[in-house]
Amino acid sequence: MKTGIGVFIAAAFALGSSWCGLVLAPSLQLGSAKLATVLNSTDTYPVQRNGDATLGLQIYRANGCAACHTEQVRQEGVSCEVSLTSLGKNKPEDFKPFAQSLLTLPEWLDHTKELSAAFKDWTGILPQVVLAKTDKESADKMADLLKAAGCKSETRIYAFGSDLSRGWGNRRSVAADFLYDNPVQLGSLRAGPDLANIGVRMADANVQLQHLYAPGAVAKNSVMPAFRYLFEVRKQVDGATSPEALTLPKEFAPAAGYEVVPKAEAKQLVAYLLSLRANVPLYEAPFTPVISAKP
Image 1 (tube, rainbow, N blue to C red):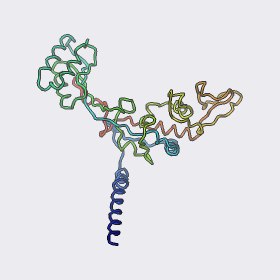
Image 2 (image 1 turned 90 degrees about the horizontal axis):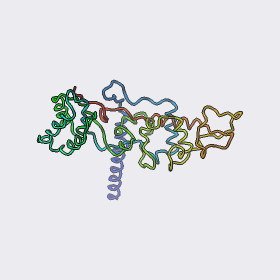
Image 3 (image 1 turned 90 degrees about the vertical axis):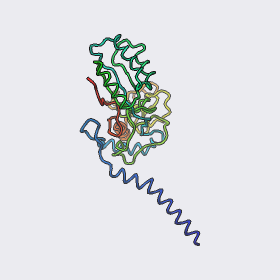
Image 4 (image 1 turned 120 degrees about the vertical axis):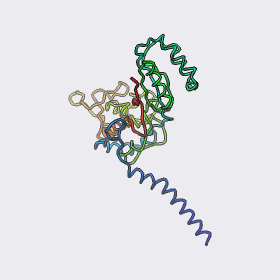
């Protein structure tokens, strides 16, 4: 009997701890979340969705879109990049020896290969990246050296990673991106591309509708199922095509005299997809803003 009570207490404690860690703590954290401030701006982020987009989130959920798509862009890190933007009174042939002279300085030994490659076949075309994937301290030192040489430079901070190189976003996803999502549709499988920034990548509502009705009409060899039950195939009135009818390639178009028009659910789903625009730099997730320029 005593053993049974002990097992019960231990099991209750384990389950309670898991619930607090996985459910209660995130709920409290997100529940107190506030609007974020856009980097180098007074604007706040995110913007509240309109009614159609809010309804579209529920249609996205009801159709199981999160089973094949994620809404979370990953990144490997953040780094600095220094670009030469103006030579001032210097000439390209005079600047090369200066760049070569940096290779003998102890603080640039770790960048020897990069500096050599940057100016090996350089013909004077600007802007020219001098240092990439470097830390802020090294970037500032290089910018100061270029300024002392009478040149102008620009230092940018940028995020990098496989998701970013695919063009899925400009930065990693953060909690602020999901402030107005209920429920949050993070997803865990990528049978299709990530959608965190699809409102920027595919900003045309008509293309979005075409993609829902006939994925292959927009993305060749797409494995996405067609959501044709969100559309109506109807007979044209007096043989004229209505303004809201989809324009489809011949192989996906309906029979002559008929047209495909989106139902309200299709429009709402597209409104939600267009609202997915994680494209502003935040303090906790910056991307490519100019952080310093040496005139």
